[in-house]
Image (cartoon, rainbow, N blue to C red; front, side, top):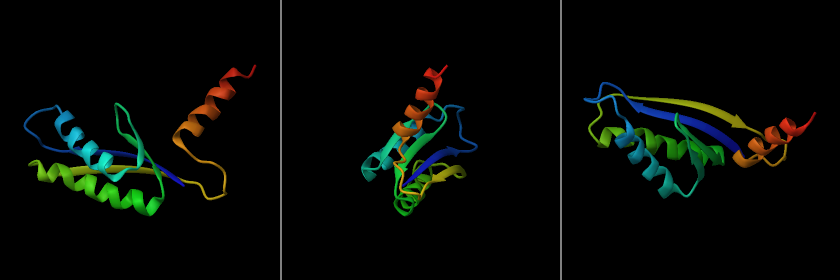
Length: 102
């Protein structure tokens, strides 16, 4: 199971606001059915890496459909294959538990 952090941003738009484009990209991701978490600076996605990368390709294309002429996509991939549970919630929970330790 992989967890991917992705940021997709059109460049050179007429306005500094990107929320219109982010909403379009989010719609593509929601349609995929992948578990994800939107953040202020990007989106976390969990699932099988091949499926995530296929969806990210569609997400990357979305701003072009909305008139962007240049899109920058950044990825950070955490792909754990040792059989341990690897989820967004599990990673956060692990840190929170350690914060409770003296």
